[in-house]
Image (cartoon, rainbow, N blue to C red; front, top):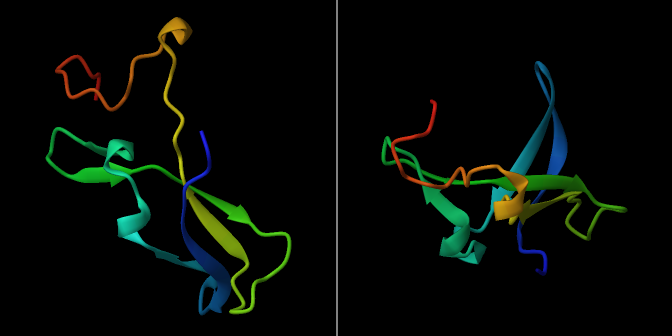
Length: 88
């Protein structure tokens, strides 16, 4: 599957050390990569990666949608499952 880019960001220095200021475009995230917890809150797993060189706006990091899902052969259950057998 191709990578799904949904944002960029850069490291900024704050009063208490370094932070990463990230901007994400919600419209760029396909709904099939969103999941809902039992609480009803919606989540998306994201990956943040440092870029080889800053872009023209000074962004040093890029944000991608984490599209990994466990395979049936792995023995792991899909964490996006809304069933009641989740241990937490």
